[in-house]
Image (cartoon, rainbow, N blue to C red; front, side, top):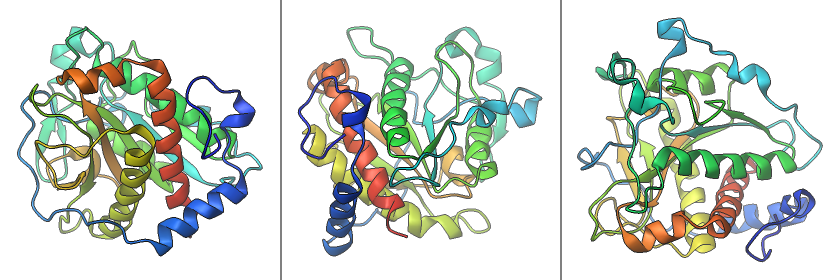
Length: 296
């Protein structure tokens, strides 16, 4: 995944960021202004199912062994780094209303286990988009030596719930966690935004600052690599800060949500539905994660 690679399908070898390229990205990230910081006020709930995550195995006795399937670290520049990628929602949620509507801990109260997610006018579902893009990001990070753990094993199941998705990152002591979503905003609004955790006493104090850095790194690379503008209907300059998302509130590791675009907007949806664009988006997301991981 070279920085200047052309769009479209690439071989596994060319998807990897070279150590030199990563060093250049890291230097640029650490020497350039961040371009804004997350806002201090959480946004209101989104008009359609919000950016929440799946079903709890630990709370409900489900299988929580997904992390045991992790690919061992490689010898690349990200060797030894652990990244949790959380594809929002799941393909079986729509047929499991009682399960996904059950209440689970959300840090500052309880919330529904998960939601169904949204879809484009053309019928491309958010849960499928999240899964497709997550697999591409996983491939790129693993090609550079990172251990990547997905919070769900396929796109046919239910959940896991918001608390369990956070716990997967916690028990694997992830260096970074990213929840991938697409928004269901107003048809007239377009663009992407990255959501970072706000400060909640006794919960998020330790991750607010590193999560803000992670949000800025992903925002910068995603904006430059996808040509998707900052959301024009919520957030500020592509960054948001929220305290109502259990997937962030319960995380003990740096974590952000990416709302990759608005599926209800025709222009955004055309991009999200394009496999070639998703490959470029995965390149950008992986670069943003790599920049953050190499800050240490």
